Amino acid sequence: MRNRFEGTAVATVVLLLLWGCGSPPAPPGPGEARGAVPDLRGFSVMVLPVQQKTAVPSGVTADPELAHALRSKGDGVTWVFPPELEEALQRSPGVSVRLHGLPVQVFSRAEVNRIGDPLFGNLVRLATLTGADVALIPVRLEYGESGAFIMSTALIDTRSGRVAWYGVLEGEPGESGDPAALASVTEALAATLFPFG
Image (cartoon, one colour):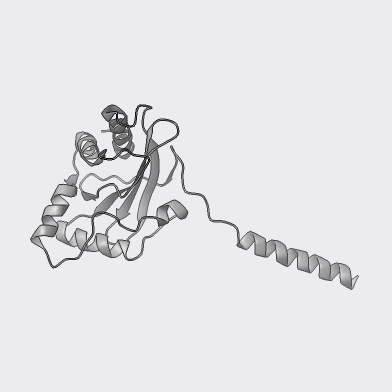
């Protein structure tokens, strides 16, 4: 009787350990999101450059397309795009902030509810210079096996570091050098952020 009890107890402990050591939830795939898109009207939103690219041809950049799509949909939002961020940094040479190569890898490894330093520190300093309430970070742009561009994006409260929304959107199929294919993923993002715009 004692051996059976000890065996059951050991098995229970092993199962609990395995359950506790389970892998974190996988990051969202195309069409998936975490959190809820906040109403951005009335807020100042700084839009950072795309941070990572995968299988995207050299010279292809989504930043101008994204700015156009957000401006066309996001009425009532004060936008601060990368050129304005660059200007703000040039006016404040003593402020050490990066716009490119930010440590955003954590978004592809785990569910992130609140960011920490050094990413949070970068956003706080940028927000201080620009007055932005929210940071929109295009975490990754990739040209997927489906033959379409995929963009992973985070919306972050610059005061608390809380990730309000993280989503992965896929554009329409097209060649990797086709501007329309690239524009379709930025338009999909804008339509998600402003569904009634």
